[in-house]
Image 1 (tube, rainbow, N blue to C red):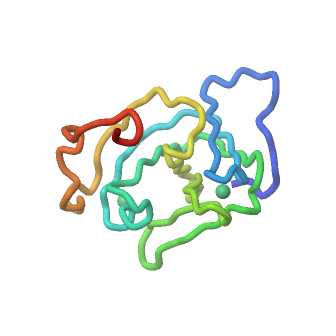
Image 2: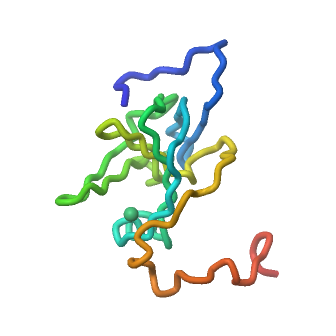
Length: 146
Ligand SMILES: [Zn+2]
Ligand SMILES: [Zn+2]
């Protein structure tokens, strides 16, 4: 993670360029490079962390992360005794990319640019919430139910 604000080089071809931001808009970032894995993790840490059924994270060992705005808002939480960590916006709490030990982890929901690839796998299925099964079969609404 760079400690200074930087923007990707302009005018060059960016075959794998992704953009993302937090909910309040204070933090914006760019990721240049390819994602190698896309996992939905149902472990207890990711469930607490996300407040949902699972985390949805993209992984890359080669992509570069550039903070475009609000890097001073980025906070990192490490869960003691585990490898679990999370980066988030100090203002709105939204999940943000985390770089550590040569691996970049990008929360898929934080991306603003369209993502073509589908998740590769569900992880830690044994830790699923009791209500987390056959969710695709639930009634579906375009927005709020009428
Ligand atoms: Zn924010
Ligand atoms: Zn997890």
